[in-house]
Length: 516
Image 1: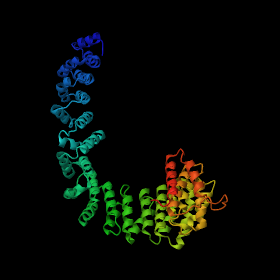
Image 2 (image 1 turned 120 degrees about the horizontal axis):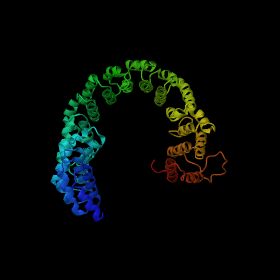
Image 3 (image 1 turned 30 degrees about the vertical axis):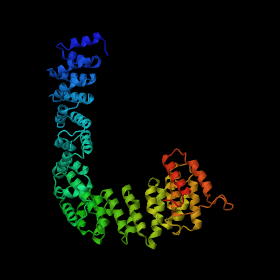
Image 4 (image 1 turned 90 degrees about the vertical axis):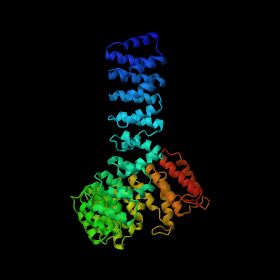
């Protein structure tokens, strides 16, 4: 509380003609004045100078006397000056003013040209738990300022059970404009889709590409011939690459010949090209694959599209897929190389022919050591390729091998089942020993990978020997007790993810028959 002479000074200053002195006096009185001085500031709501009115609003908020602000602040919230409106709204929020008058004042500010004022209006209405004018509120879903539409979205979500709010959101989802319609479509739960069908189908021709994307996304969950035909027709007529990309992804379905024409049209587009390549791969006929071959050979095509085409070729499983993909591992563009790796991985997953196994094994293993930064991707492509096991074991044992390579290799030593190729009892024990040794590796990625792989081994059903099963040489895999002790020591490792993985292995050791 200020001294009497300070308060007296500010009261005198309010009567002078100098604007800056009156502004300073109003702010000062708001800081040091007493309760009764709030009414003095309220009288300044009618001052002809906007800076003084703004200072009065600031002072009212500081003094904290709701009764004084109940009449003055709603008037100031409708002021011609945006700074006055902004400060008045903040003061009303601070004073926690309530009542119909303050609700109407906040509601009018929803359409304010100043985004700070719109934000304050939303904050005030949220505190009151009311929508104000429902149409104005929902229209703010299309506001260009993220802080505005984000707060509007939050308030609408809070009031989602209000019948008038729900009805306006549905109306906006059906017939709204631009961004507001997009956000309304994301707000509505999937159970509302059926009642929106007619408007969604019409929305596929909306002038806004963003609306067309949102509509297509909503329709993607409806699996009926009518909807699929409408999406296919929309793709045929679509001029926007971004929308075409979405439609191609939605319609991507094995054997759908309708995709060939649109996919060919977009295949060399920088935005929609990758989706077009994936779609052609799904169609999987001679014509489609011929287009993919042309794409991977054309260095003028954007690299992401060539990469997607390479992966699609591998997934198609054509007789020459491996021979088309192997040369791409040396492509100058790293995206294309990655696509070739993914394509070869798909070919491995689908099953290589006998004469393809060695070239693919050699190429992928060489890439492991040559490109450590992509070791995980390459390792994923090697899953299920038993021909690679000797080389993978050599890399796991190598002391000069990059830690990312060793980390990527260890999980590849875990079989899908103990009777799988390359994993006899001797090989299983050897591989478990490698994993246990990895727990002591100085590099955290290797320790983490070893712990994950050990957990997978236990899921497969590999039974570790007990510590009392006779003499063990230093190369024999440790028994459960010894492994338990090593894991307990790792449970205090600085790495959170390693501690979590170790805890999972300890749980599997404690309850080998429990759920995986």
